[in-house]
Image 1 (cartoon, rainbow, N blue to C red):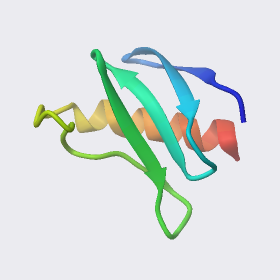
Image 2: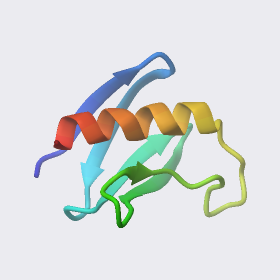
Image 3: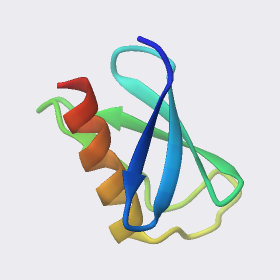
Image 4: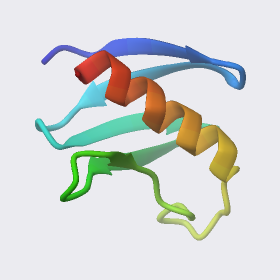
Length: 71
């Protein structure tokens, strides 16, 4: 799968699939890994690798758009 862009109320985000189950998204200058869980839903982490907290509403809307694009 190729990289694609999604648009949410929080902005535009470029998504780079790293596998069929994992996606890399640049959010506020940090690469966030979103992945599908065992039920097939895309889930977002609550914090980054650097310990920064991110807006869960934004991450969930990004995850929803990824699910729509990859369905």
